[in-house]
Length: 180
Ligand SMILES: [Fe+2]
Image (cartoon, rainbow, N blue to C red; front, side, top):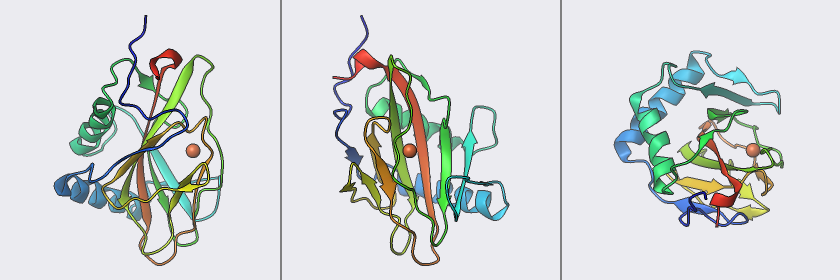
């Protein structure tokens, strides 16, 4: 009998945690993200222009805060039985001016739910607004939003202005029957 995690959003809903990152965590992650991009460590995302990303796993050179925050997103929902989502895992996504995420749904194995916990590390001056199931997700830098990307179509509006959009995305799989 699997555990059930009542703190998770419903499969057709989005949970938002305001100010999920402390100002110190935000400052470390923002400097790191800008460094990753300026040193060319983010790859071109073939899904669309002006988009870059990199995936990270244990052993990669990232600030300790990265793994602390990743663990805290999971414990925030009191999730104990999970595995890394194997396709995208934890990634840093960057959209520069003109970049946007086209509407799509992601995959999940039939016996699992795919959960994404996204953190806005850098919010553009304008645009870069996430949409989940056609609904605007009203978030600021440091906020986290959590949803089921294999169930809910999602997208973002084009980035406007010269402040890049950096999102830290943490993906896990949980047993299907652990979601209320
Ligand atoms: Fe997605």
